[in-house]
Image (tube, rainbow, N blue to C red; front, side, top):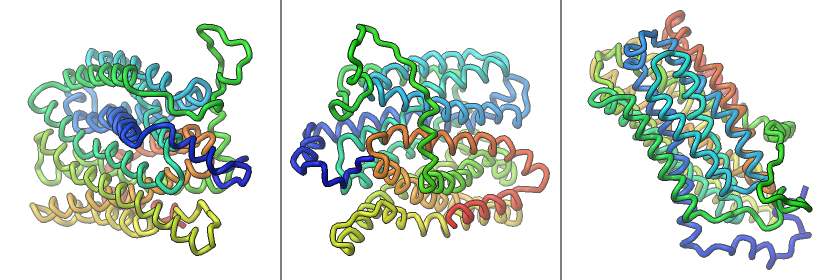
Length: 433
């Protein structure tokens, strides 16, 4: 495998690849892919504060409606593999354009749902359509930015994207309380249409010239349809290093989903919060923490890489970037989720609520202090298939998370929120080991 450090690459040619776009054009591309990926966050996170109202409107239990959320995570796993695999053949731009119609149709379908079956189906379609935005975004950044800049830019991309977790729950709660969760999904469909137009008119193809599968087809038809195995991306995880960082990131990210999923079910009930908008607002600190953590960790990982490269007299070791994950993974994540469970169980009143909000912020910082360097690491080590590497990583962790989130509410009902969170904290520490 030819890496970015291969001596076979001529320096000037290597630099030319990354100088195809002017700096202002690169910034616009990052801004656009961040805006597109933000929709994925809104599709997932606006649903959480809507669970009580959806359960009431469709005459379902909270646990059954939360199954829809788990299914959307599963759809994200499947979709990320499909879109990333085809982006390596057809290019980033076309795949962005093909995914958006699924979002538009799926969002309208969710808004029109009158039964659990229709809700499950259209939620899957909606999540499938926007599932590739994170892996494609990481691939695009790998296409246009060099090694020493990549961690910072991916940190900004993830920071802006995951800021959706700060805003989306509040928007979802506000819409549910004062408007309609159905109208909210109509708006998500309109957002998907706007993104499709922006990509069509202002997003260039960023893949390196001659690297796409379709470029190597001798006889190409005007509409050339080729079968690409979406599961081929998962074969990248046969690398022990890539599998290990995927598993570590998954165990850390589970803690964030557990905290978000249990907010309305435990924290809201414990502290007497019945207003869906307020419940959504209580999730704001977690998204704000994610935004902060990804920005800081992205830049820190670049600094760590350069520092250790200088110590080795120019020798690059991609695992150096992972040193930036230690504080978040070993301390901030397990302490925040464990403390939240104990606080919810034993401390009532405004003090308990304030401490829970603090835990949400610390958890957000910690989780993205781990995810941002790992995302950059995946692009570094499998640069020629960066979107597929990101998709394999995200799909695997979403498959695991979709299974775990189904068990969260039953676990809380059976052993309590304190023990549920303590188990999650232990898992997070195990992942860093």
